[in-house]
Length: 213
Length: 132
Image 1 (tube, rainbow over the protein chains, first blue to last red):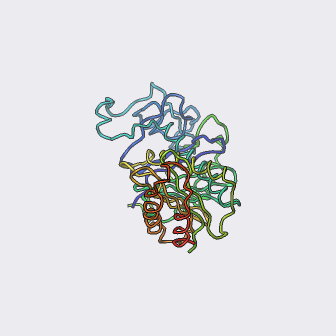
Image 2: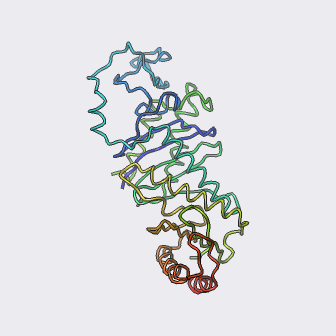
């Protein structure tokens, strides 16, 4: 039993946040222009090895105070890159990849979720929500907020409904570090909502779940 | 513990049999059922590609708040879909029995054209006996 990944979509069908945990089949990095900046550093078009991305807005040093800033996806090329640059062949050997670039995958997930939501709504004849589906290897959970944000989580198929976790994620980290964060432009269609505090908080929450092994 | 409906979808995504049981879900027009079956066929193909680990089957169970859809894919590509209440635990077994009835009353019927809508009193009767 485990948790594989989390996608957050806004009401304009765009993926604004992505996080993965124990995926054995990684998505390939998105194609250029396929996803917004600040969705997830692990799948954005350019791979950078710099641990501390250069952030033009981050004028305070981290020693002088708490900065809940927005992560920049495209660090300045002049910033110090730490560690050797891995060459692409060896990297692909380390992680088997699904063959789908991330932007394609994100669109497919969204398409499935929306189609199923409409199907359930049509079949029930009332405003009933789609909750989850499962296949032989994974289970997809959906929580949709009143404002049209969709939280989608992929887990092991034997896990019970994780809707309450997605709800907690919305009422906890999301409200605290995204909605109440003036540096995160919501509904902008220009960039995602990824920032250090939100990511850390979501990570801690998921790793604390009893189903996360 | 209630059964709301049964669909049979052919390998091309066309709905060849559809029947409602009880009044747990509203009745839609046959056109709407055709569209939903086609959508389900597409979703089934996509879900097997989204697996975060290893190769996956297509979607097996879809849950809403008051009902769920259990989908059985046969080796020949025909899909049997059973709409039941969320608490129904025997949907898999029922689908297996429906498949048997299908093999007996439809596939062995010399007047049935494969991949075409199922119009057979014998099949209807046996499904009624099984699910009705």
